[in-house]
Length: 244
Image 1: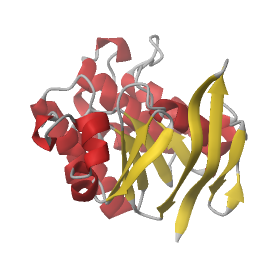
Image 2: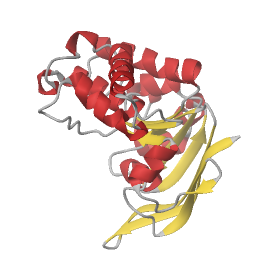
Image 3: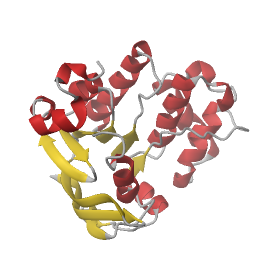
Image 4: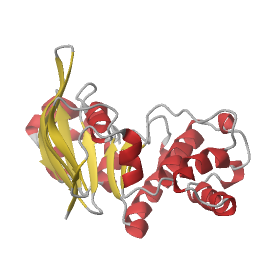
């Protein structure tokens, strides 16, 4: 059963068509990888889906409800949450306090809020940093904190915008394990924008390829990485040229 459907979405900025007639659906519990060259419209698509910007055309349906153009906080509270490429934690707060703040939409008692945020901090591997200022975290830690803040919203659908960017291979593996666990243990539906093809191949049930604001191809990772159109637009002359 589809939990998210995007139909005929288009968006332009001062004459530039960032998205044109984008259609796709995501089933409950599915992991959809989204790839494409820089400027293909991937982040703009996330912004439209999550309500940060309104589309010029088309609809976004989440859980059977039309949420096109709804305010981001309303969409997030309904269960569709995203992370951002640029991590901006509250500098005056500890790691745990940043996570607790994200969870306050539930208006939980202080003890439950504290315990629940600590559980999430430990789940993302930041237990040793919980009571330290968020600004002391290295890049890998900031990526985990961004994910933890999203998890504090208890998402049914989680949109990840280059959650692995800036991480070395040894730092990526625990994050990939956590994302797989979110689907397996929590039933979370995942959409993730990523340039690291090894991660896309490992996690994705299906892959959607954007090019110049349009859907170029969709299918399994194996199908899209062998599609001549995708190879020409994004992967280079050989699929093996993409980052492993």
